[in-house]
Length: 214
Image (tube, rainbow, N blue to C red; front, side):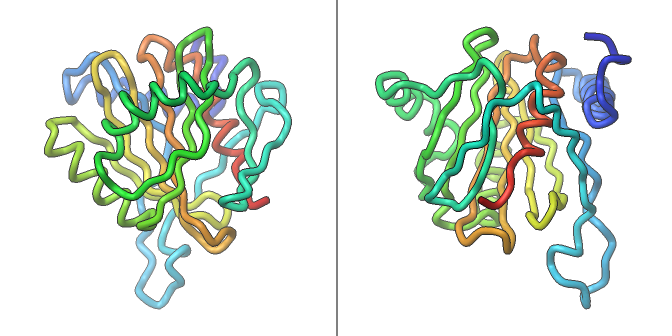
C-alpha cells in the first residue's frame, strides 16, 4: 500500500510515524492523526476543550455491528478478524493483559485476533474511569522506559485519551473513552506488529470510527 492509497487520516498517521522514527531513533511507532488538545477557556464544557477528530469508516473493511451490553457501546470488528476462544483468551489474560494493566481495576470484555497478521483488538471496562486509567497507564509505561506519544481529542461525544508506544516489534495503541453517550468508561486497545502498521491504518481508522453508543 503506497501513500497515495491512504486516506487523509491514515496518511497523517504515516507521516507522524516517520517523524517519531527520526526523532526517537526507534525502529518505528504507529500513531493516529490526532489533533492536539484545544485551547478553549475555562468556561467551556469539558468535552469542548478538545479538538474533534473525524474518522473515515470504510464499510468494506468491517463486519456487522455488535453491541457490548456491559458498556452500552456499538462497534464493528474488521473483516477476517475473529474473537478469541476461551483457551486463547486465558493465555492473553495471563501473559499479555498484565503488561498493559498491571494490577489496576480493569475488566477484560472482548478480544479479537487477525489471524493473518497477529494483530489484536481489545475491549476493557474501566472501573476507575478513563482519565484515571490513562494517567496510571502513562506513568507505568514511562517508568518502564517506553517512549510514549500521548494525545487527547474528541470523537463525536466521546473524549478520548490515547497512548502509543512500541514494545519489541509490537506497536501498542491504547484509547481511553469517556463521555456522556455511555455510563461506563472503557478502553480500546490495538496490538499490531510494526511490520504491518501501514496495512492496518485504514482498518484501525474504520474500527475506531465505528465505535458509538448502542
